[in-house]
Image (cartoon, one colour):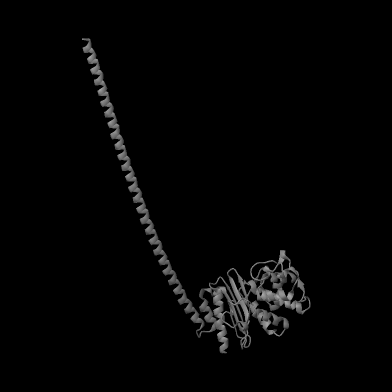
Length: 347
């Protein structure tokens, strides 16, 4: 009986152990299945993300290609429009330039050539032999810029002539007053040429041939200042223009040049004429003319572009041009100058 109970207990124990093993096995299998399922889900998610990433890259690549194509199309379109604009400008330029070669009266040619720019342009032509004069906006006030230096030279020579100034006097450079950038050579010679007094004659030469701003300021200083010089210029030509700033009119400059020509046998004025012929600037009045026939002085200041001079043909003449806010002003001045020159040669 006792043995039977022992057997039953052993059997029960074994059964419970087997059942436990089965449960453990089932649990392990379940976990294994779950792990496999999770791995599948992870793999599927990774695949989905990969597909999304590839789709995104494809979409970005397509967008990039489309953007490049659009940019290329726009660039080609802009290039075509630019070329078309240039062609139109060339045609207009050719058409307007042909007006200068027409048989219209000179003043009318200039007016048609300049078109809407005519109100921002001052011009005088004066035949020094016949007295013929053509004027456009001659009393309009313009920025003188460096054309002021012609009048400055004439005022200085007048003082030399009357004995109040020695042409050989050495002028000491005063940096605080005399330095100015822009055109000229003296800016680079502070420790050489300007280290010792510079003769008035040299300052006069440089103010014209190089349009030297330091030389100009040194001359202004010894004459009592630019305002006083402008007052002397007004008196010299019998006209009035505001002297508080660097302004002028074509008529004032014409009268200065006429006076200069009429007194060309004066040794000082003849020196000024020679300096004007020896300028380093040749992009306006004398661009299409023989340089040695043109005594001139250019001016630049912002949108103000000018050139004034005397042209020594068989029938010499004065020509004055001021442009302010005009498109392509230097070239327009040069082509008008060429037209005037050719007309003078026909006389």
